[in-house]
Length: 304
Image (cartoon, rainbow, N blue to C red; front, side, top):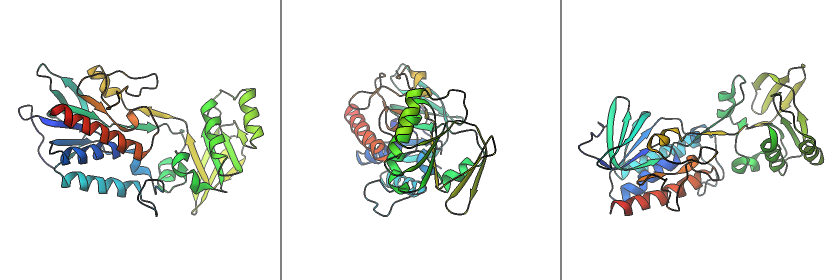
């Protein structure tokens, strides 16, 4: 691992986040002959994708980890440096430099790109990481609804968002169950009517047990002892946007915690840019890459 810069030799851009957005930005900046360093916490949501079939250019699909590996190699080919670590603190000094503190080290940069993403909110049930990696538990029907056609599908979701997601997935299968996990907030009459009219089953009792077996079967047990079997589960409980570190610099967020950006992906703080799921919009890898391309180009022009 390369030694970190100190504040006497500032980078052109420091990128916080090593997912598709951060790595794409590093590729562009390297090709612009800009010095860029990526600080990667190693928790990209893309790393949990068993196979993506809707990312352009890979008709047979590609795993999230394989895509990340290719992006890292490409970024390094053009001079970017990638360090593992967690940025604990950000500052903006009197010389208009961004100062980042991570793992006992300090970096200075003329511009900063946040690509910290978001984290899925998961139900408090056992063995869910295993279910995700084996492709049993999904989060994005826009990404992979096509792959669950005709399957028996269960959805963890609540309120209007849970109903909305269930209606979206209904296009792909007629065997669909929405489970609200017994959180106490039962669906209202209108929400139940929408599910009934779409022939979507509803279970509002808590889940007491999760079982993963074989290649396709997911077993759940409801609190009253009822056993449920599904081919695929979707967790649609929302995401936590990882934008907190930007508020240290005074960047503005919307009501969901997404960073507010301009047409060139610049936040309310001059020289601070953002890309990917930390920005409001469609949570897709190709969208994150597009954000990054726009932001990196704007950074290059700003530095010029």
